[in-house]
Length: 181
Image (cartoon, rainbow, N blue to C red; front, side):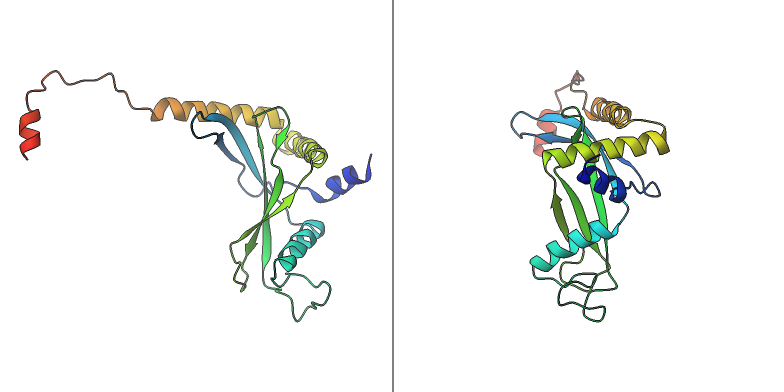
């Protein structure tokens, strides 16, 4: 096991107390490519909090936890972060290119703001494996099976949401009356 694999194992935990969100997304506006998504909220860990704090501090905001020149008295101790990551069936083993950290309950101007913890392709692979391991253990399904469910839901929604344009009223003589109103 590599050092980064160990870090992921010790710090990436799906918050199964929150809802797993099934959805879809698309790329390209003119010729859309749709794909299924599953989004997870992650449990806050010291490492994720520290990374988010560093990103916020570099952006000019007070961190949530003591670091550098900030102490317990000068940091934003009432706030916290919610962390999110998603997977998609765009290609096998696709995980978001970042973990999103959302600022919660902060008195800071960036309350509700979101910061990205960027992930390399190698890191994405380790995190996908960790998410898959946890889904199998706690949900009894792999990430691929969850994505299949999301794809089915997406396709069902698309089938039910398209209007049926095959109906054309036979009596169209009242168009003059409608135009005059």
